[in-house]
Amino acid sequence: MNILPDPNATVASLLTPEAAKAAALAASTATAPGVLSIDLDALIANWRKLEKTAVPAEAAAVVKGDAYGCGTGPVTRALAAAGCKTFFVATLGEAAAVRAVAPDATIYVLDGFFQTTGDEFAKLNCRPVIGDLYELAEWDVYCRRTGWNGGAAIHIDTGMNRLGLTVTEAQGIVPRIAAGDHGITLVMSHLVAAESPNHSINAKQVSAFREIASQFAGVPASLSASSGIFLGSQFQFDLIRPGAAMYGVNPTPEADNPMQPVVDLKARVVQVRNVERGDTVGYGATWSARRPTKIAVLSAGYADGYFRAAGSNDGTRGADVIIAGQRCPIAGRISMDLMAVDVTDLPPNVARRGQMATLIGDGITVDELAHHFGTIGYEVLTSLGPRYARIYKGGDAKPAAVPTTAPAAPVAPAS
Ligand SMILES: *Cc1c(COP(=O)(O)O)cnc(C)c1O
Image (cartoon, rainbow, N blue to C red; front, side, top):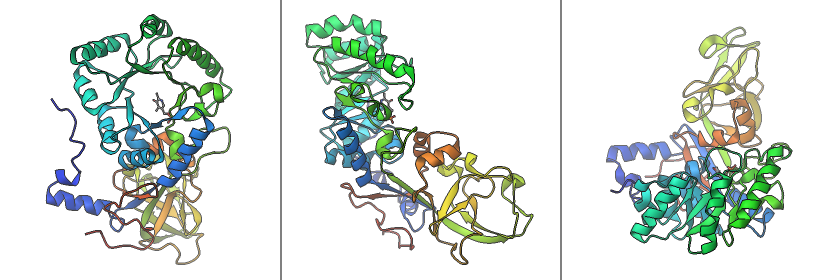
């Protein structure tokens, strides 16, 4: 049974003409409520920087969660063209999306192997990350029965207590490694608190992993994701697995961000209105105008992944947006599809209907927004909503169904 969509089918070919038209409208920068631009050149520069930091280790790329909300297809294609050979995803569906654009890549599936998924692993030629002895046995049975020898990673738990064999369990399979012809292509573990360089668990994990990995003779070893790479060369082993840092999230939150921003997000001003002193704005009447106020209403809200937590009230300032180069504070609660911003301090007639406002970019970082959302940059990215038109810049980006010019002036929808 084929449990996956045909990776070669384009989205458009699966839609009725009406639905295809709706999709085209949604993808058009002229009609979509917002525009999400992904800078593939910055993404590649970030990946190269991580690779360089960890030389001579190989740099893989983690593209789970639709490439952290940035789009698996374009991101994978750009990274593969830049020389990335190994990709990590969470699920088989994600592996299919990677395989569709990277026919020669090595793909590891972090969620691992089930008896029922063997045929899909073989068909996609991707490798499970095995984290349990029963799972290992099931994989062995499948390989013996079918003759498939596509390889697998062994995940060893060194402190996360999420996925992975215990160190003792891993020691139990060392004789098998020593005997050769074992099919294990990678041994890995995952750090718990790598973004906190002074946390004592880092040293414990690296020494436990070094010890057990050294017994997996001839098998490449991998420990570090984005933040671990910056803990020093002893954390880098043979393969690094960066995700977030490639997409511009700061891997060293206690220091300046060494990465370039990748994501730029804009939403449209749908109305500008004047509010009298003492009037309130938005649901709950939690924000009141302390002066005659000009409010711009933007077409993005929590259904677009702009968390309600970023709103403001009379006691607390929320997040900012940028209009005409100037920061403007959010006024009141974020609605499902809309948010209000105080544009009183902008020069007259600068905030106009139809104009774009920057929600991420021009100095508003993913990490800054995460602070207002009460979360981390990872969740900001993976929450980026489906209603934005997506534009890819640089890389080997193929011409998409949307114009690639800046969205400042409305453009005709692609026909
Ligand atoms: C998500 C994940 C990564 C990538 O983590 P980042 O912090 O985004 O770089 C690497 N390894 C494993 C096992 C993961 O689950």
